[in-house]
Amino acid sequence: MSADSDALIPMYSPFFGAMGASAAMIFSALGAAYGTAKSGVGIAAMSVMRPELIMKCLIPVVMAGIIAIYGLVVAVLIAGKLHSASEGYSLYQGFVHLGAGLSVGLSGLAAGFAIGIVGDAGVRGTAQQPRLFVGMILILIFAEVLGLYGLIVAIYLYTKTS
Image 1 (cartoon, rainbow, N blue to C red):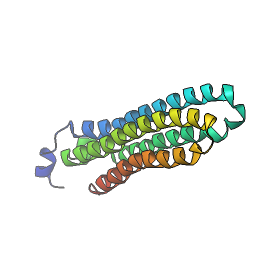
Image 2 (image 1 turned 90 degrees about the horizontal axis):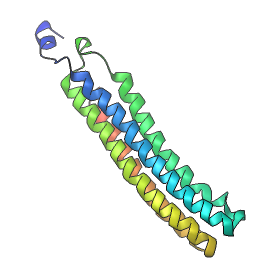
Image 3 (image 1 turned 60 degrees about the horizontal axis):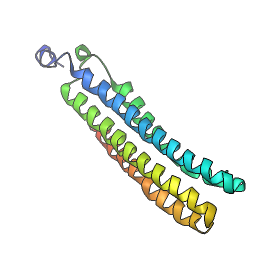
């Protein structure tokens, strides 16, 4: 970079990248925590009637935890590219990293909410009618893929700064 282009980079550019990494982790962890808590309540209620189904019905909790991993991956990728403005971290890079973090974070939050609600109702229903289990798993997969879509978009955005 020339001295002229360095002068055009605002010193607050890395702030947006840091916010992207934070948003990725915070929102996806919130979604995972909600999904885990809501599904856990359903498992606790279901286990009173059918304790032999506890291990089988832990699947929603595992799927909710995967949502946080999506956010962690993007947050680590963004943090790895984060530099000071004097090292050439542009406002464009900051905005793209913010967009990537929000993409995976907010889609992870939505997916976590869906997993929690479906997991709670699904494990309670499975305790009463075991044939509901396969349907619950299919709906959980559709909820999980919402977070995966956010991860894909985030990684695509992340590669735009290379």
